[in-house]
Amino acid sequence: MSSDPWGRVDETGTVYVRTADGEQVVGSWQAGSPEEALAYFERKYEGLVVEIGLLEKRVKTTDLSAKDAQTAIDHIRGQVDAHHAVGDLDALRTRLDKLVETVDKRREERKQQRAKQSDEARHAKEALVTEAEELAQSDQWRAAGERLRSLVDTWKGLPRLDRKSDDELWHRFSHARSAFSKRRKAHFAQLDAQREDARKTKERLVAEAESLSASTDWGPTAARYRELMSEWKAAGRAQREHEDDLWNRFRGAQDIFFAARSSVFAERDAEQAENLKLKEELAEEAEKLLPIGELKGARAAFRSINERWEAIGHVPRDARPKVEGRMHAVERAIQEAEETEWRRTNPEARARAEGLTGQLQAAVDKLKGQIEQARAQGNNAKADKLERELEGRQALLDQALKGLQEFGG
Image 1 (cartoon, rainbow, N blue to C red):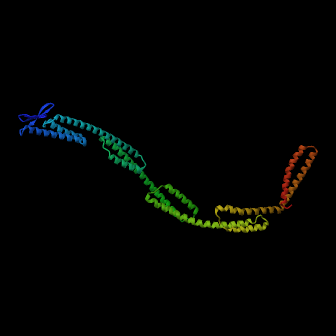
Image 2 (image 1 turned 120 degrees about the horizontal axis):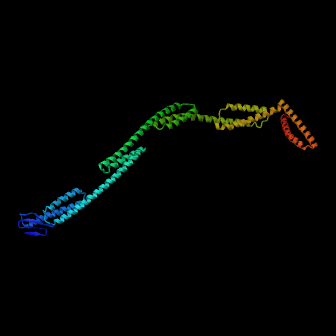
Image 3 (image 1 turned 120 degrees about the vertical axis):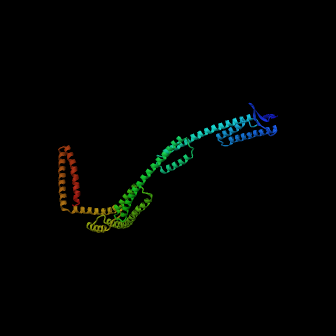
């Protein structure tokens, strides 16, 4: 019989292993010596040690799933429990038990990790849904559309939740995208209709602008062009492929008209500037008649100047008041001289002036006599009253005398 600390072989060739529960039969060995039998089953034990070591390393350093790790542990434990090896089998069981604890711990950690990831994914998808629902109400069509496409890519990169939760969130997310697309489609359909209306309106405006481009009715046509421009701005934009062409035609028609008007106005301005120069020379010639001396000669000279004045065309509007004012001043001076001469040579007016003067002189003389009488009688109050009346009559007499002097008397 042969033995070592963990096993023995009896005389019948039966091999035993020592465990905490006593000796267990390992097997029977008839092919050689007892030492060879023990060495064979010890090698099997070493094989189990190596296998457990490798499994411990895989569990520690790789992503071996808990299920696969447990299957491997159960397989090795079956070999240990079958007692087909000689060695410290209890130590192997202890290592396997610890390995099970490690695997269970990792299983729980992974479960918690998956729960955390799922919770994070849920929050992330809920945030995507909330943002998508907000974007669904946006009128920033390009930016919101690009952002929604970005949210879809983000969604695809997130882990799935449980089917019910994932489907509910996706339904809300998809509905928000559909609502935005529907609103955007309606907006651009309306915009297309508006732009088509604008195109028709602008084509009408262009047709009228082109029909007016050859007009020489400068004022009303320029005013109508201003109205057309206001209508153009109010019409809004047409489709991009039409807008520039319509504008070029519209602007081109205006340019033709205003270029022609500018050319005519430039000629007119030059002519009016020359007219102004001529009229200023005539005004200066007329002013040399002042002060009016011999009336008949002055009147004839002014008539000649005025005839030449009337033969000259228009002058610039802003210069007209000043130059015309100079001529009017000379004309008024001649008129005043004529009125003075008429009063001086009018016999009826002279007679009326002499009669009025005589009446006033008589009234003054009479008042003076009444004043002297009142003073002599001591009636000073009456005298004072009559003197005040005398002052008024004397003033009228002085004025009448002055007028009579104009008749040379």
